[in-house]
Length: 115
Image (cartoon, rainbow, N blue to C red):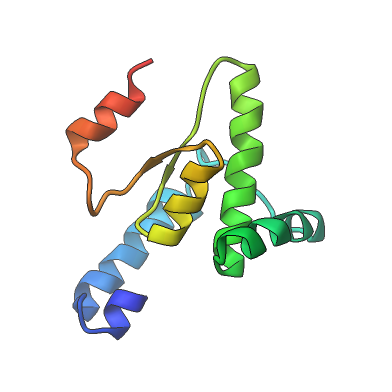
């Protein structure tokens, strides 16, 4: 939305991105969705304060940290993919693997995916 509002992203590209996001994430049955209930929101508050991130990013980060902790008990890990620099810095400071699709290559992602 920020890029569209700043005229750095054409309206047609933004509209297509929303359609793609709906199909690939929102309506996909294979994607696990986590409800942002009061417990999650409250647990995100220290992250919001510590890293000066917005509320949505705090909730995303808290969810990612919780999911990563669960995955690590099973021998897996989580890669947080985002382009917001504050969120990525906070995630990295919290020990998460990060990937920025606007700054990193597919080859760099492949390296993160190799066990």
